[in-house]
Length: 178
Image (cartoon, rainbow, N blue to C red; front, top):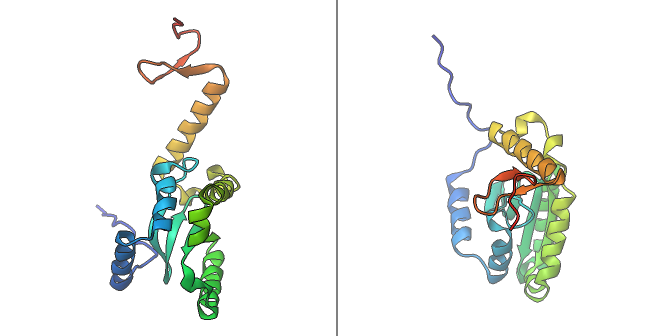
């Protein structure tokens, strides 16, 4: 009888990087707090974002793995030439891994929050569809959820809706109108 061991992940996060990411999650700026409140819990077009996540040698502010989107909120130190070069290397690394990178500065977030959120929402909408990803990138649960969402969308387009008392899907002919 053969026993199968769980495959080890192809990525590795060093202890130092893990501790640094946790520290950044605890101590985040007001601009990051504003963006996180709009992105967390699938609030932005149903997309799942993670905060202060290690990707390779870098820790990104926000990432949506499904949309392959990284959102960076930069403070004033990022406008120095040395930091701009470092950011360019970081962006090149992330783009090379298939991510799109959106950068905003703290002032932009604080003064034009709605514009920043609209830009992020547009980037999510233009992301490749889940159904176009290779099967190995989507878990069984992910495939089931995508199929469920498609089924729900088809049912709603066919004139079906949600029963007000139970929150379950019912055909419009079964719904009792007051």
